[in-house]
Length: 155
Image (cartoon, rainbow, N blue to C red; front, side):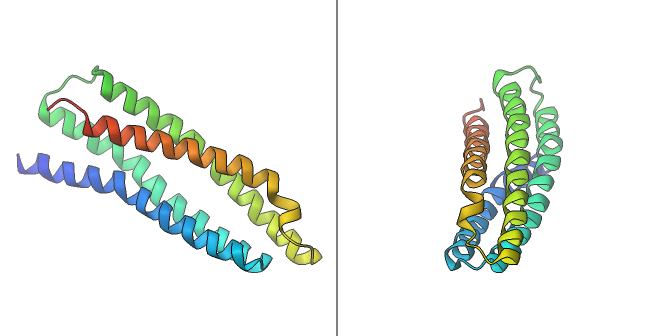
């Protein structure tokens, strides 16, 4: 039973750590964006993108493994609705996250172009930010739904 508790702790960390990191990275990006310097924005977006990739990729890789181990240890069938729904939501959240990071890299490239041309960055990136924000919100909603399913599972 101790290994089950260890798996629960690891699974919980893998689920919560990206959410906390996203909050911190969003705050860092917002502060950089408020400064208005295209070079600083491009640097901040590169750091945000790399940190986001590492944290989210690690979480996406570990959640199915630790989740399967926990289900197997508990003896639950894999066909339970909450398990299937959370697995599908993880796939959808991953797709939205990939779309968001693609937009993030585009905004970074546009910030570098704005820095080279000396124009304000807001002229180049309004549409990219809107789509990126939509993908981010959808990915976040999927992750919150997964957390709700994990908490509401049968005991």
